[in-house]
Amino acid sequence: MGGYVSLSLIGVSLLTYASQGKLSKYKQVGPSGFHPIIGALLGLIPGCVATIVVSSMYKNKKISFGGLFATFIATLGEGSFVLLGASDEASVVANLKAFFIVNLVGAIAAIVFGYLVDSVGIHISVKDIPVKATHDKHHKSQEITLSEVIIKYIGFYLILSFSLFLLPGSLMALWGGDLPGYDSLFDQAAILFSLTSIIYYFIYTFTSKRQSCSCGNNLREALEHAVIDISTVIVYVFAGLLVANYIIDILIGPETFDAWMTSSAFIVVAIAGIIGATPGCGGMISVAVAYLAIPNFPIAALITAGIATSGDGIFPLLVSNKKAAIVITALGLLVALIVGYALLALGIEIQSSLSTFER
Image: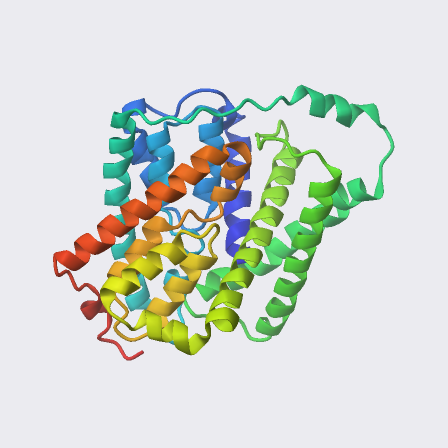
């Protein structure tokens, strides 16, 4: 998953750099009347990079609240890669069918409710973050500290190197492929990559004043922003998965959790929505895994979790605009339950066509 995150964030940083900063200026993206559609299309991009980017766009007043909301409704976060990848529980074709259906319903809901939010006139203003003081502070001291060496050199090059090394294995994992002799090295590199990212994140957090993410004037600066974002997302994903697995495996217990997930569809939809609404990608990943592993798991519940999840983009939004993050989480859960129960009420049993394969 770290490989997917790295690929997405580095790609966005390079595109931002190639655009010569156009994505960072205070200029709206397209006509405001199309913002929910733009937001929904961005949300369909696998992973959390879209929500992270759109959160920055909203902070810079480049997209409407309806566009921001649409992105969060449409995104599946890192749960996308669970459905895109091959597994022991399901075939690639079945995964792709589920991925397509969940994204289609999510995109429709995102556009409809995005326009509804904009038509009502909901807008939560963003506080301007002064940047001048940060730059002045940066230039006051000419001494290079150990933390700066780690941030600008050791950690920077290690994270980029691990990202490149993990890229082939991450891409092949989408289709269940492998490379002889590479898997064991991949696992070891993934562990070291995670540890490096966690250490880098905490050193950066406690020794540097956090700034708003903007496009650098040179390639090095753009890659530095990418490395910071990669370490941040990996820490949040790790924390989310740790909490989700602790709750499921320790507090609740696997047997009880499986019993909940195989109970009535009405209850499963509610549980999936609540789990999906938890900050980060851990909840959505858990529901996606449950969909693949548990026979006859209703796809309505998977769709509910997909709409409710905000992915890791909720964290930078919490930093820049806590009120907007809370409103989006609450409204997203409400929309998710409406759509999920509407599918059940209409008697749409999409899961029957996806459960024909042997689990």
